[in-house]
Image (cartoon, rainbow over the protein chains, first blue to last red):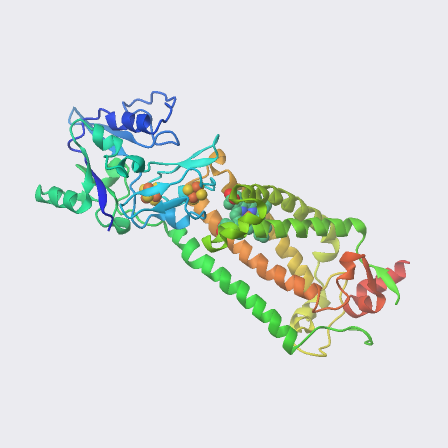
Length: 251
Length: 205
Ligand code: HEM
Ligand code: SF4
Ligand code: SF4
């Protein structure tokens, strides 16, 4: 289990987007041009330049407007599917403190991680040819500081600290935690007010089936198939041998 | 030793470019197959260059797949009764001194490989382009995941096929490789391996 984690209690969130802004500021990410789509949500999703954003769920129930907010970014999975598929050693690694770190210098932009992430987190930057996502402010936490979003959140909806104590604290308050054990335990967990799918989160996040098939079945079968072919060729040469034509008539 | 022309310079050039682009694709692709092969990307100057060569060798490869198809389809895409018999005796490869029916320019096994290269090449191209620029084509994630599986399955099947092809074209059948190097083969070789083609060539002269 990872040592540290972030716990986001959405019932405390006031939708102020301070996390979103402080993330941009600390990571020096440019603003993204967005357009109005009938919601206060802005921008409408993560991108290579937006690593945290607040998802708005605006519904009308019995004539009353109901607002729900979800501060969303990388979930820093323990058994992270993105790490499992990244072909470049060191480009995408899981650290013991719980951070899933994407090294911009090493990433080659193959986009394998994009296809594997159950949360649609990594995004490709066409101009830079690389993939970007939240690094849980590794440059801050490495120096004993909190991630920028947690530090900024006015109602303290985002808390960062020792994973065990965060879980214990939430449980003593009788709260249900999203992501405690999924994918080996997420390092970003939620206390939600509605079902996960209401917020666009997978109910049971897991390694996508096709990704597991690709990495764990097809690739090993490849070694088997090629090995068997080479063995068959060697055996054929030794036992049956080449077809000589010299001195023979017809076929 | 009397010689006869088997492949003209154009045919040989197409095959050579096809084969070289395949080898480049294999070497540049394999560096991404598993982290344990990552070192291979150094040959091409790092993973970014390796991928660059993979993409553009892929474009060359897919063009030559079609060139090969059109240059040999008349001889390689029609099967006759002798070919059925050829399959029945496995081309004589599973024993010594097996009686093998006469073949045209290509034997039945070569015709199967010809088909395999064409379909594999087209599928390689389709899956490869999806893997290359999924964001531009807005391909759903599920399809992208499937293309990785397909690209690898074609790869595995094709490497198995090409290894066999290279073996059969070199040490398993002495005298064959000169058809690619000089274009000429020994007439005795031609009569032994491709009797119907040999007779037709002789008649034509
Ligand atoms: C038209 C032909 C092809 C195209 C367009 C193509 C394209 C691609 C692309 C885009 C990738 C993803 C990695 C990256 O972005 O660099 C890839 C991976 C790969 N390709 Fe190809 N490719 C083609 C043919 C081939 C051939 C002929 C081979 C083998 C001889 C091959 C072997 C591989 C391998 C081993 C990988 C590693 C990734 C994996 O395990 O799936 N490719 N290819
Ligand atoms: S949420 Fe996605 S990008 Fe983040 S660690 Fe998990 S799989 Fe990787
Ligand atoms: S895009 Fe970058 S981080 Fe993602 S899998 Fe490829 S090399 Fe790794």
